[in-house]
Length: 306
Image 1 (spheres, rainbow, N blue to C red):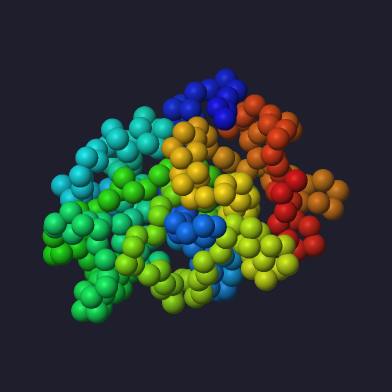
Image 2 (cartoon, rainbow, N blue to C red; image 1 turned 90 degrees about the vertical axis):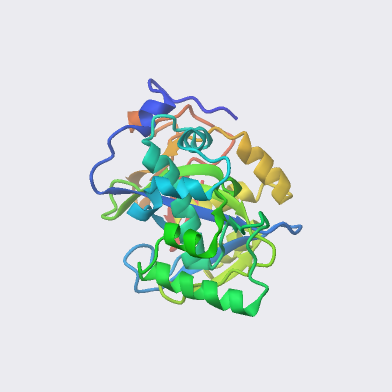
């Protein structure tokens, strides 16, 4: 479905100054190819300042190492222009356009142990060999400690990264009421064969593969906590019967930035999404859509869409 912004183009919207405290970030929705497909969720440590205890997708903010143009030498058929085209943000700076993809690759490896890359012989990187698996586990820890960069890892292991295995899906901006804010692009990616996802036991303490329907059910029963962007995303994913259908739809999806607007109505608190008829942030307002939930509210200690 093509979404129409009011009074502003997508490019101008994406270039709108959000404020110095808003940091660019990438999140990866890691998907299995089995039927029904499952999604990888990780629980943040309860003591984390941002979304502590919640189940989230792997991801994090863009680091300076992610914007290094020399990383393009370790890719095939990937350019800043291609990155901007896929993100549907043609006015992004070149460094940030590629940085969002490389941040997704790095964060997925750091947090979930999954590396989207090809070996020197053009075969997907796999960790079947025990020695290789242990060696890359060491690199994962070094990346976490900022003791190595993606560029150095590529040089050492003679690998090419695979940003084109990432399919842009959505674009969420943390509401203005939050102290820590991110401008986050969400990507879809299949879990590679011969790699096994695992939490890092640092910021993330547990992980589960769940179908979207299962995750939503567990959330409503208060067995897990899904924050609003994750909740809305899971509801969208639950509409697809297969991962193939999901990725096909994503490649034809019009991506608009989503800046939720906080509201209070009586005893109810919640967030209006840009397609809600009462949404009032003109810069991000979209045409009303009545065929899907447009608000996320807190009821009985659980986030719900209405």
